[in-house]
Length: 521
Image (cartoon, rainbow, N blue to C red; front, side, top):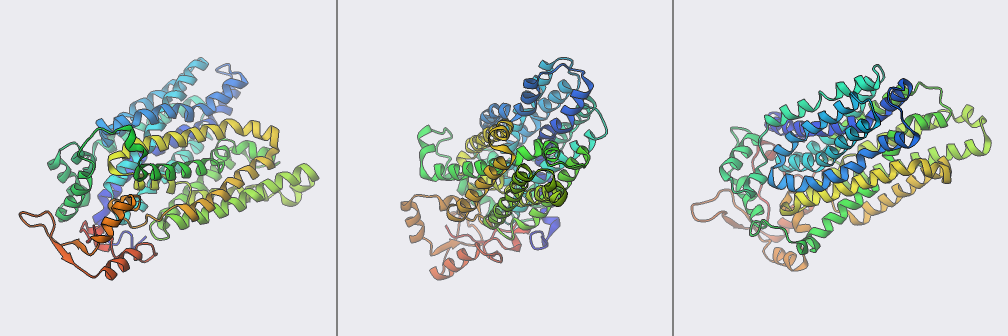
């Protein structure tokens, strides 16, 4: 971490921008977590008559409503901008919580949950794209982890408050948090990439200067950013056929696959039904205490992942995360299998295993699959298609979330608890193989380098033929870049270093100061 932020004052503004956008993820966590303490309190109070079907739908409907939000988020990000979109979603977030808090009929609960759920669909692509476009490549991984940290923080805050107040007071308190998002984003600039794509060059330059520091020379980085965006500037309109190109389709499929594997690990079933799992395991621990412990462990593990994401790399984190998740789910499934076969004796001898397995799973998930898929989503997509692809990937993620939450009860009835957790385990194993064989490493790479990874063979050959040139130190009057010839072997050596833990030659410590390091084109 010290190496990532060798000059912390130089990246302080970027950290502030990442934290501001990540507040939307904190509110997302509050929406997700409200049902855990809120629904039992609501049922005990009998303030609103609810059927079993109402209880199930009110708990699980936000991910379904998020699908609509994800589809609308793309045009909003394109035409309104990343900053303005994040500011505007704070208003419906508050309205949703207020409707829940003042609910006197089930319809108000439905509308409030649907409204908050729709805003979840905006939050994921908006925040991650905003952070990805504001951060320099050296610190993008660490700053991208802010979203998962704030998501865990929102869950923990809701668990703690919900342990002491009833369901309606909880909703009223949570309705105040979106004001923090609005105020924080008001103080932030729009991203340089979006401003440049809308021909607002002077504003883009001021934005980049603000993000990199007032005394930082941004000339080289700004010219690189302009050159990269110019590739897709010939036509602002996106034609459907373009989405089928390999350079666009491959990153989208990779991102969607990671979203599928993330949700089919069963994480949201565990978060939503923690109390149920402990009760079925015969745990005598207080339900509120159990949820708070899970929330604390998830937050601490997610914070720890920020120290690792740009050191260990995305692939290694996902691989380790997938392996440990598989082991913990296998153990949890084995406990429920033995409980069914041998009865209550298992609770006396292995009563510690469910809690240990659950905490180990939360730690492993938070260290990799919690934030890396969203981080990669912001990195893999080409600049021209980033908004629409981000919305599609998030939409798919939410569809998977809804599927897993709604199917949890039915799976328990048909497969048993052990079969359900072994089903989740099998997807974790599939995830390990997928990451190992198909997912490229993006650690320390600029957006330009990542886009070249998915270019067609013809473009890759053109790059290989011209790879003996690299950017010079300064632009002159007539040319954008000064070209310098260097040995091909030296370029290959530098490029290969970015895959290793210490390969920061292309994105060196100097980039924390805003200085651009030469990158071959």
